Length: 315
Picture 1 (cartoon, rainbow, N blue to C red):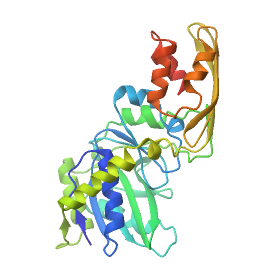
Picture 2 (picture 1 turned 135 degrees about the vertical axis):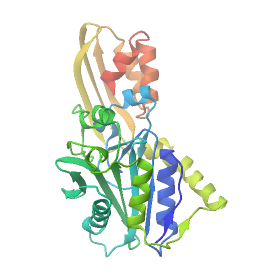
Picture 3 (picture 1 turned 30 degrees about the horizontal axis):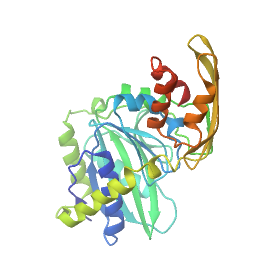
């Protein structure tokens, strides 16, 4: 088994790093740990706007990153530890082959973890880990979160309670589950750094090589980060086709908005509100990209003193 040294906290880089390892180290099993600064990571087939409040994330400076595996939306911060586990596969979907070794390792270091549902790990009734998989070339990339000491209030506010039914889409919808951190459930406390070291020691056999990428490999990861994971085409352009419709009150008068998007391009935009120029609103959005920056610019042009309020109604 190989393990990798990845000290980056950049969520875009870390997705690229993982994909690079998956594609370029096909002969060995791999297990390594990594962390992100605050970020929302969505599944390959999800509608971002259905899962999180994209306008609020933009205002808070929390990026959205789309990964190559399916599954639901997760929130990462520096109290969360992510693991990547790459093994051979016979082509059948089998979460237990990857989950049970991780659960066994957690138990061995004093975490009273158990499997919950198909791809979750829990302590009692609280979820501590969600996971997803991507299979290709006889290999399976299994990766998951481990909520060690995360800010659960932020997680709850931007993911768990944010399911916007104004967006109607066939994209994968995240399950809503109660969550908990690992640290309060430990019989003997440990720091996050101790947790990482002990978990790695359980999962990776003694003497296993620890790989550090070469300068040339680092450059390839950075290229993948910039050309794929930071791109609009990957993050927003892959959003499943959807329709949006919302009725509300804006500036004290009735408000109605509707639009569609296919391959990330807006169409059939209709905005009716006595406090706004609906024709101008439609012109600003019709045929444009599904992108918080586009909506922010339109809202500033339509209602400069109430742009945030308007954006919350449109996205």
